Length: 249
Image (cartoon, rainbow, N blue to C red; front, side, top):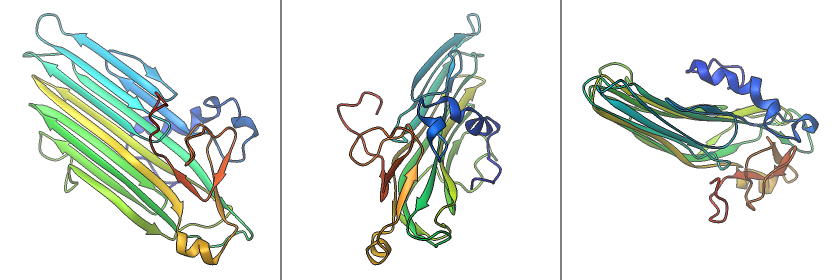
């Protein structure tokens, strides 16, 4: 997926901003995670966190939007419009995390297993919610829209349930992306898009027979023990789960 074209133009900025996202990134063999969070009527940030926005079109209607990205790869956006001709609501949260498989031998096929869920909703005359999980050997696309066409056959929600994929070679750079975006216009409406529960690991049965391989991943994400990786983290899995004592989750 590293060399593929991304479905949203804003996502192409992730690689360009990656070096600025971690004080340790310049010493890492794996690029830092690329993050972008935005909301109409608000601002754009290039770190984990939340953005809110609000705007009105005179007395004809208003919009409010909030977007969030967390170090555990949870991303979300939600917005609503009210009135006959409101200001447009739109939001986006995306994270690109890079990783390599390292171990005793280069160019070894290493199976990985990924899990995660995505959901969307939309209501009103012109509203849309999108939530995508894109990984090296596949993707989960979910979409809701109140106008015909944009979603095609994509479902409004879905999940990756311990999906094993084998198009991975040791000592090669790959990336995993999560994207939530949405918009509402032309009257009273609302949208949501959410991604949560992402885990990525070396397939355990294969690893038991081939010890010594591990994932080396971007700075700025959270690993299984709940600590932040600085420069480059290592482990047999990237397990990004919430900790109640971390407000960024």
